[in-house]
Image 1 (cartoon, one colour):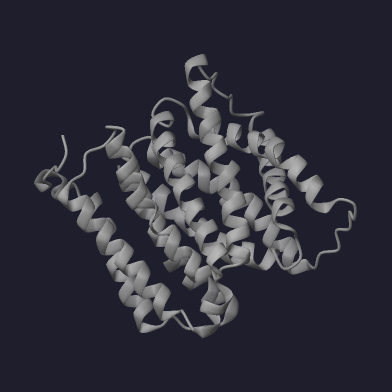
Image 2: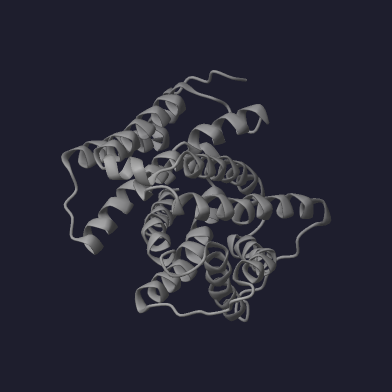
Length: 299
């Protein structure tokens, strides 16, 4: 089981870099074009890998769930997230994204997929609290100015669609290989975003981007787009959705670390305190010993 937790940690690391990469790329590349191109890069990886890895056949009864999965994320999620990040500070955006475990647990409980337990609630609260401390410690008057109400609402919508995606993925990942699911997502997204990218650039199709934006695009296409989803699906094949989604709260920690490396800034004491709370919340829920002591609040 420990290696499945490692998959989730590495996925969070890659997604942590995506907030910084997206912000850099958006200076030169339009939002829908950025999403389309990162999935074009992902599709090249899929086509190359599919020569050696056979895709599973999706059963007819599961096609509607796979389609809905793809509509939630990457479909709607990246529309909300990309436009939201453009109007929101990355740190503020990562705080809102940290609410994913809350929504996942609520959706899964309503759908009778998971039970709400004491340790899950405490772990989620600790984790969200840690993200809050990190976010507020990095929030200045400039951050607030850069974060419009519309941007915050868009990132919140991204959070809701990502939560619905996680619940559906946890269902499908127990039946299908992660490569199969990731491949279908990438193929769907290329088709979904092609007309949006064409409309966005019409009638001026000029692509004069600097090297920094191109490097950011390559990173987004290879790591957060393909490998992170592959690892996240692998983790969900053995771990409950609400528990797996808790690992997304590691994203602000990785975002802060990557920002420090790229921007030569030092993590604040609050960032370290918040990181301890996040890791503590994740550990509380994932500890095997705690699972034996946990108290269910729903049947």
